[in-house]
Length: 344
Image (cartoon, rainbow, N blue to C red; front, side, top):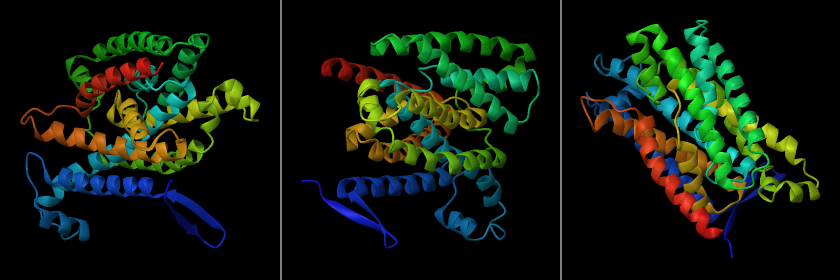
C-alpha cells in the first residue's frame, strides 16, 4: 500500500503526495544544494566556504579576490541548474509525445534545428541573443514537426530515432559550413559553443535562461498532469475524450521552447533528456505528474555535475559539459534500447 502525506494549500486545496516521492524530491534538492556549493568552491582558484558565505551574505563587502571569481562562476551555475532542468523536461515531453523512451532533443534533431537557426541568425544577420532565442524556437519546432511527420507512419521505435538522426546530421553539416565562413577565430568560438560549453555564460545569459525557466518550468509541471492519456496511445486517448493531436502539438511546441534558450546560451546538450527521464522513470514509475519534477531535478544535477567535473578534473584543459554528458548518454542509450527490446 502506498503511503502518502497531504500537502494543504489553504482550506480547500489538499494534495496527496507519496512518501517515497517526497523523500526522493528532498534528497535531490539536498544534492543540488551540495553540488552547487561545490561548484562555487572548485576551480583553478579554489574558494573557501567562509568566503562563499561572506559573498552570499553581502556582495558589496565580499573579498576583493573572491568577488571576481564568483562573478564568473555563479552565472554558469544558474545556467547549468535551470538549463539542465529545461532540457531534461523537453526530453521527457518528447518521449511522451512519441511514446518512445529513447527520444531526446538531440536524437530527434530538435537541438540541431535550433542550432542551425541560431548560427544563421548570429553569423549572417548579427542578431542579438534575445532575438536568437525566438529564431532557435522556430528552428527547433520546425525540425520537430518535420521529423514527426516523416516518421508518422512508422510504428517502430528505431524509425523515429533514425529519421531524427538523419535530419540532425544534415543540419549539423549545414551548421559547420556556416561556422567556417567567419575564419578560424570565429570557428573556434562556435566550436566550443556547439559542444555544449558553459565557459562563456554571462550574467545576461543566466538572466535570460532564468526568465524563460520561470515561465516554462511551471507550465511543464501543469502539462505533465494532462499528458497521461498520450501514454495510452492516440486511439485510447481519443476514446476517453482527450484530443491527442492537439495535445501532442502543444507538448512538442513546449519541448522546443524549453530547448531554444538553452541552446542560445550554452549550446546543445545531447542525451541529457534521455538520461534524466530514463533514471526518473526507474525511480518513480510511469506517472507523468511524478516523473516530470524528478526528471527536472536529475537533469539539473547532471548538467551542473558535468560542468564542474569538466572544468576541474582535467586542468588546465576545460572539457565542455556537453561532451561528458554525451559519453554517458551513449551508454544510457544502449542500455535503454536493450531494455526496450527485452520488454517487447
